[in-house]
Image (tube, rainbow over all chains, first blue to last red; front, side, top):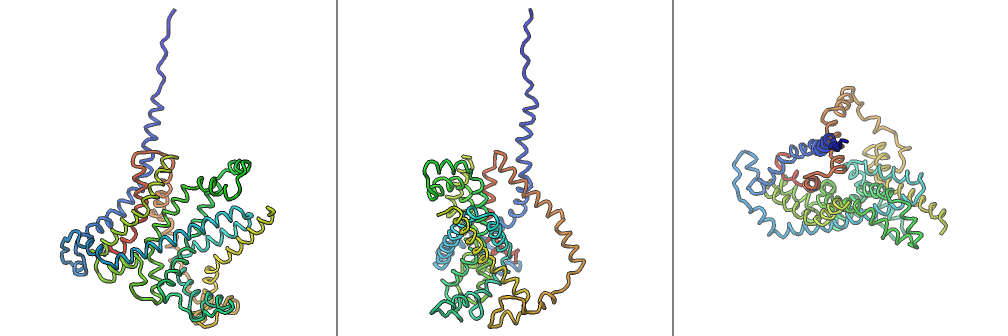
Length: 314
Length: 125
């Protein structure tokens, strides 16, 4: 009687396939990494180097840029006006981002509750608003808030005892930033609403039915079941809103072009632009941009960590 | 409250919000039919019907060459490569766990934060 030794299973194809698939994500990511390196390495390196040099208008015409190391940073960090602009920008960012998130989540819940035809109407309107270019948005809004023939003043004046004809919404800084916040919120809500609605459609009906059977009311189902399920989407949306609203530039600049002039109407984006392009202090502007990057990292650090934690946990 | 009434109210709210949200878009379209003089006049014109469509009629006709160049730009290699790039990277980070994945995600988030550099870089004047 002969005993046949069990043959070793042929693992070679499986290993080959595993090794091929382990390399696949790197090949998929290579084009994006290449684009990042090509598109960012030069401006980023230029910015870091210039933030430590005295780089003004003379240097633009070929004069050597002397190294002053951290002088630009020290000057900015000891400048009270810089901190005023930072504080103003942070408040603007928080108010606008939170308003955008609240309205976006509200509209997403409304879309879930409404019949299909009305949902399509609302989504179309949101997409139309979202599709408008920033310059077109600002032009139309400048007509809407015009002090002489703007629709907003006209409609408000229809209220009994209110006369808003001739009221300039951009005159006072508070009113100026309120208008800017409304416009940015109006333009940002469609992205949040549609993203949250997409996340809501992924919440299983069985889970909600089970919660209903357990006696959970609508509010409890929303806060204890739906929100935790869509939390990763909410975190990334809030993070993006924080980043985008902190570095807002075009809307503020275009509103400033409509009349108000002065430091009281600046946020970080326009402040850095003013330093660099307006005053020709490119080195200082580069340092300010680097400080803003650090501030953005500090503000959003918690959310980035949460995002990565959620991602690792999933 | 009846579930059906709730849905009616939700539909009504959705339509009203849609009207409010799309109003600036409507105002842009309405204004595109008006002359600059009419737009800046003290009286508002809410419908373009009374105004002649001179603004759009006066806009320069699109030349064949410009249309062709736009078509070319859309089908250009740079456009198609960026489109394929934007498809491949999400595939990589959503379907695979690999070394450097977290760093890549962090870099993308950092890139979002870096926009103010454009204002400070003299090369972009």
